Length: 124
Image (cartoon, rainbow, N blue to C red; front, side, top):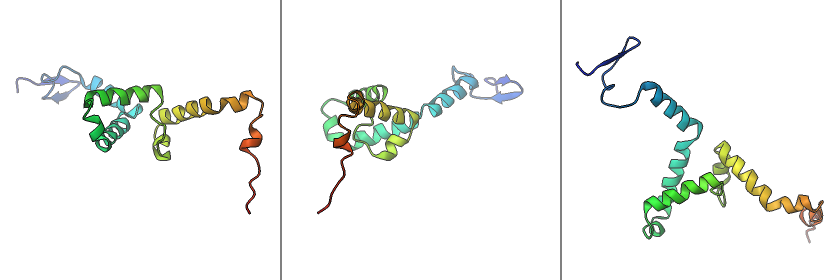
């Protein structure tokens, strides 16, 4: 094999076919795993398939752009099931930020609204 690269005693026949090293591939896979990229890709494709009629109006590329912008902004967890919110650390942090934004007035008003939230319920 003329296109074989020897690295630390290992033979990689594909080494000259790809412009990246094994370490860059390893780091890329590690990064993808740490950031739960597969979770978000699966969810994006699932959302795409569920809403394919609506998406045909503005295109798949725009859908993916908007989806990953919502992931970056933390709004992707709105109106989602608990299992999705719980799935990744980013989802949990996004939920807590959103929850805090929605209910921070309760804390700022010194519990003024706590009687509304915590009033006893009576059943008749």
